[in-house]
Image (tube, rainbow, N blue to C red; front, side, top):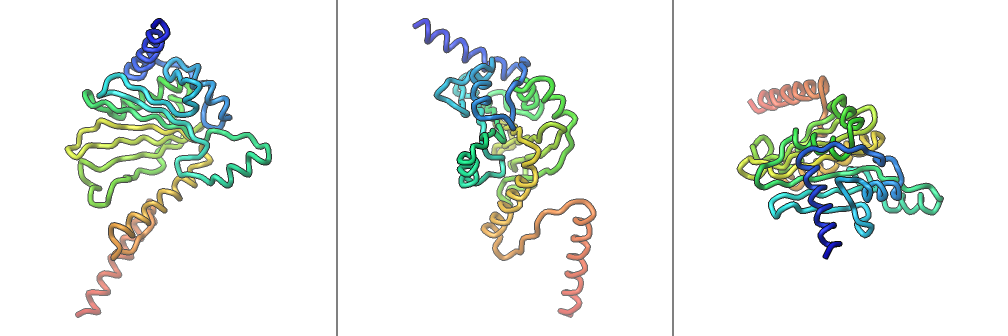
Length: 243
């Protein structure tokens, strides 16, 4: 009975720190070994992972409020299990390349500032400061094409800091309220692979949802303006030919 009470108290304290933004210090981060990450998660006053939970935990405060934390040996863009096996056989240490936590709050909702407070709570002041100094690399939406531009469209932003890369995600409900959000922290070297994976997913989505329309990979800045101008000229040419 005392053991159950102690476990419940620990879980309650960890959830309180997540929701109230009580800052702790990080000692294991993406780029370190799986063993180091697991030890950090078990010792962390907020996460308090059990040995059997390894790199994934799930905590419920109430049925309407919960969070999850997951570390992965792959970046957010995915990876090859074959490559992982080759590294294991060569004796190369297997590292955690990305970590992601998700907050769900049906009553009070989830906002970007709340996600940022949770980032500071879990990773401490140094990583939080790196995030605050980071530069936006890409804004995108993983939602269906028909939902984009509406209040129900999911919104994600990729940032690059001096230490790590960060992805902030908010997932609105159909009515526009936001009860779910997530933050990913990953090694900076995985940014190109992550962007490539996003483009691949977009290609697949365009093919499935709008098979009659050719997909044009997202471009930025001057190239995007040039592309719009070329499309405008092509459309004008088509009209003239038709006449």
